[in-house]
Length: 288
Image 1: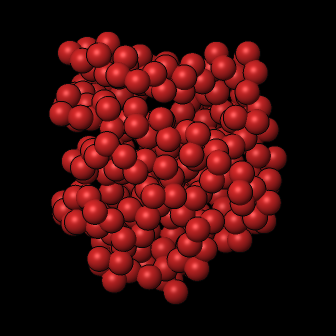
Image 2: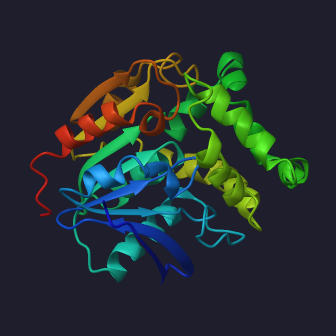
């Protein structure tokens, strides 16, 4: 049985919580919304057989601090960089889902010398979502706008975190019962912690800064190999965007794979398929 260890470290001015397992070349896993590092429970044991795995709770999520500011993706990428520095970790393979993929993409652009290969799961970059915004996109991305309203989401969600999360997990998964029982309860407990909903909202409220950062280096393509995975049955990503074309605009070397019978959470909905693709893509990653 894989020994998954919990750690905390002060890095980039906040207390960060992360999971760690295995030895060897480092693979960093960055979760999305509405999840925490718990999202990687199916990947960590498998990857840890060959790699040193680190899975942090991002700023504002899980057991990591939830400060009032600092949620632009450049600074959230700096959170990850400073965590790695605290452990004297140099080069990494980087895997991000959803919001974590946004952090990972910014990390790969800002610190290209550190990222050997990049995996992005079910994510359309923020700049491209904004560029393609129309009535259809706005309906699919309604929560982007709802989360931007100051204080209102926190007020409406308070005491109803289970109903709020149930909507996303049911609506976003091909099988609406994928995340249930103790797993669902784990997420509910995380979002009932003080500041947790506000932290997630703050991540979205950095949208304007994120787009501005992305516009500045829009013509700079990611140099390392990129694997883009997405759920074939999720309306807001795979059905709405040409994902191979999206990521060819972002990077020089792209492999694109749709996951069948899968919505927005490939790592939780189809973990065996995702694990196989990750191991194949990471093959040969030696840590330098």
